[in-house]
Length: 633
Picture 1 (cartoon, rainbow, N blue to C red):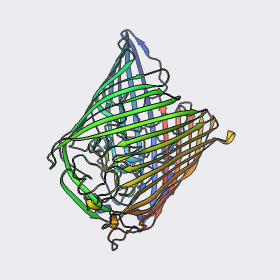
Picture 2: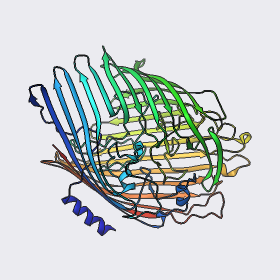
Picture 3: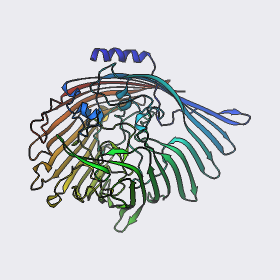
Picture 4: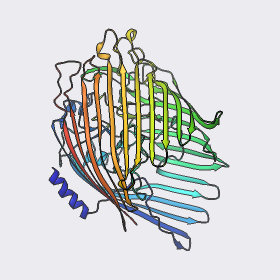
């Protein structure tokens, strides 16, 4: 497979393959004069080739066929724990071009953005391992254009797709004198409060020169200044208006969210914000979201037809939801406090209801975040407290395609349900959690050190008594059968980043995370026990050889070891080691990025609740070669 990968890679260097991202291409040529105004045209070609070779017994997990047919237990492997994206063999070529046309006259600008895309290669790798597909083709947004579906096993040529599409992405009008901008089509919000609304994150393993841990404190991805980062969230589709009322900025939007086919979800929001010269500011926001269409099966216990499945990965709940409605209102204020402290107060309230379920009425929930920080020379110390109630912002929203399907029930990070996304940012504390977070940061120009430590406790136990309550969600721990013997769990997280300028040798970066989860077993159900550790690190050496060349190399590890839904037995014991190398080169007509990565996943066979169920080895190895060429015009 490696020889084939090298051959395909060489061909790609001679054959352009184009990819478009949701960022504006650069450089921007000067508009050309015309009698009726000024016309501007700009565009970019992105050529991408990916060749991925994967081999090992883990390519065909025991739970794979069952999951494809609707079983709730996700397969043990193969997936990349750094990104939760599946690792499957295959080759991908993308040909995409974007074009931005604008017309300007007397303070009015009209802009239209469109693109053309041609795809050739493995569907899974197209969906997860290259630049995000154009919105018209992206299965995570609900597009069925590529026909993406879960497939076990897979090898090059078995699940390939060939096709081409064109589409208009956005129409944008702005009025300079009134500072009003109107957008229609696919867009990102200009301002939003994370505890009220956060756009769905991408599930791609986004191409970059370096690797990162999922909860990384590392600075922005290392790259040339001219290399735009890939979008890390999925866009909205609808209409958006922004404007200024004196020093206050206002934004309103009506847009569709990513959703499964036949189950549309739509949001309306309005926000206002003000920023001050000293860095302080405030924002308030209101949001309403509603779903329709077909019912969806979710891993909750409060919907219709609730079921508890006994699986080798523990007791998995599922129920059916439809006609969901949720409203959220919240605000944030950053201000100077006494004793030279910088303070933040953030809060939100939500109401939720759904059709056709046994529990009628409205579920209410709240979120509170308060924090203070103090400068200590070139360092800063901060203390924050989070309270994220189990019925706050708990609308269940599936992506447009089965997400994270290769990550098992005990995979981490796991702040939310595995195949769904949440309306708000749950990356810090997570639903049904409360507790403190302490942070320290120091940067003297040559050395950078970031550290956070948090310990969050489960607010309410997840039992057959609590689970059926309308809107109740527990993001990670599994359900307990006997409410009289319920226990609550804890989540302790340590994140650190150390950066060191080594002069002519480049910059050294050490990215580290460690997650420790624990929940004691109830007296009569020893399988309720959860106790495991998930250490992760990435060590990288990066260097800007000049303004035209950037290179990086390094290695990383992501491991998980401990007990999960099997008493005190060590039944989770696996890890992935990965090494990477890559470079970006600025050329007279554009830029080029070439990266290579080797990943090796190894672990002990998993024994579930039933000791007679034995998993075959999840081991596999993967070699990933990636080339991207950007040609602005």
